[in-house]
Amino acid sequence: MNQRERVALALREVKTLPTLPDVAVRLLETSDDPNVSTREIAAIVGGDMALASRVLKLVNSPFFGMSREVTSVQQALVIIGMANLRSMVLSSALVDLFDKEGAVGDFNRREFWKHSVAVAIAARALAKHTRVVDTEIAFTAGLLHDMGKVVVDRYLHPEFVRIVELLEDEDVPMTEAEMEVLGVNHAELGQHLAGRWNLPEILQEAVGFHHGPREATKHAPLAALVMTADAIARRAGVGQGGGADHPLYLSVLELCGLDLQKYDRIANDLSSVLEEQVTGFAREV
Image 1 (tube, rainbow, N blue to C red):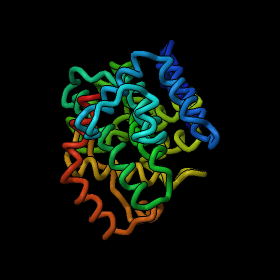
Image 2: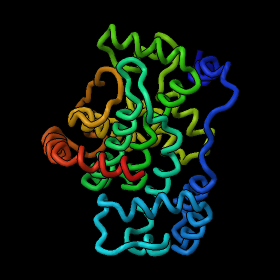
Image 3: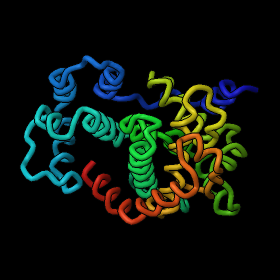
């Protein structure tokens, strides 16, 4: 049975899957257009008043440390740049897909959201250091990397409970418990959802192969970078991803332009600031 068949089997009883807000879809469509103007981006964001308000709240939060109040999306674009604004809008659009209340056994949903934000911030920092991928794409991939877990928790909840119970009995990565219970893992489910959302192929691969980047066909560096960011977030103890850590091999580091020394230096630098950055971002979003 191939991956597509296993995903279809796991989701056979699921009638609906979450959809990406229209404004996020439209913004992602502009990410490959070098000629798009700030006015066009501002118009897209401004078309969703609730989302625009949330973005302005984040821009004016201590996370960005603005010296004066930002009162419009257009102004925010000028100050923080298009790439940062796109990441921020997508983060704000996605936040409602994460149920941040309650827990299932040892799996705490609020801590899982913090983990997703931590991986996004770490991925952006890694991309800035290595320059193997765009920083905005890296942030988005980090934020989305575990969205398959959201699908299992929300739409296959009895199976999710069994997965968490299995993790409480066995110290194994979550993917192993998922395969035992579902026959498919969260990375595969996340890649399926990313495809349904028509996300760029690079994001689909990053989500689908963040635990096995060497298997990615076209975008292994980003998948490796997300896996490395995941390891940094877990090493820093920020949030909760669920399950035991996946081993991080030197070959994975090399895929995203790192060696062990560079990895340790970046991981140590991020460990000292990641908790504060994640708390500020997660609170405001």
